[in-house]
Length: 408
Image 1 (spheres, one colour):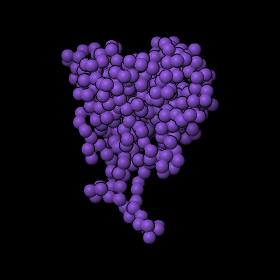
Image 2 (cartoon, rainbow, N blue to C red):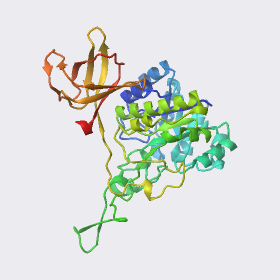
Image 3 (cartoon, rainbow, N blue to C red):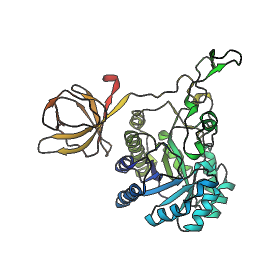
Image 4 (cartoon, rainbow, N blue to C red):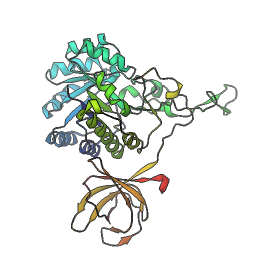
């Protein structure tokens, strides 16, 4: 089976960037039945535009319907399944047997992928879903490479998709009740409040308002805060285990995050697929994924059962060494001028890096900048303002501009 790089698409801009920077397929949700209520998600008109954009470039679109629905949540679901089938989506992602049976009844030819929410942790479960008609399993995050390899050996025709990069849930495959219990927001219906990232204190019943820190080994109070998954150093091992779809987490992350992570994995995957026998990991790929806001990295359950080293007890925050400051809309070769849409403040004298879709980076020190009226400016402080700057090298459209905060 060909190896697929699968990227998150929380909105149309993220979908476009995912595809421009190397994704083979994207996964997204309409405005109902998906598990990311906080993502932008796609209206019917946007979904049509997304499919047209992706299919025109021979890329695939998978629609998530992976909530764990209650009776009332099935209202309108049949019509929605008919609608996305008519649009020509490439597959639907489900976790609930009731949703699965409805999809098979209404659209028997629509490929169905079984969500990580279904917690497939053994080859018997995988065989069950394949016998029902599923074409792909999205592996539970609790599976090791050896366990994935065994499932692949038992069911070689079943596609295996696995999360390889992104945030980890304290319950890993996502069946968590903490958000619902603490603030009434149901993680299993797309509305998680992420209480696993909060800082906790202990209060004795008869001493209200007197808080004591909850400390584990003297290192901190963020007891549930998992590190981020990163498997970019283990691509050969993943492929040998039978994984055919490399899934990146992050429908609620920025377009800059999506583009950066997709591009790094694209470069690493292509290098391996072009010459597996002589493949050598290039540490610049790990440096690239570290240039977006992230927590410390872990390999999750893939290599061994995670212990305390996979949690970040001292802080619930992110490591942020680079900042996304703009998108290149066009380059005028005749004048050597970039047209940029600003995303964060740009100042004269900033040391920036232009990240191009083809994998190359162009370092640049910001000198003269002009606003759209042609006036010379020393800063671009207004959100999404357009500006121009000079550069001697040709720059690809939709390149992203980032700034090293350690040099700001």
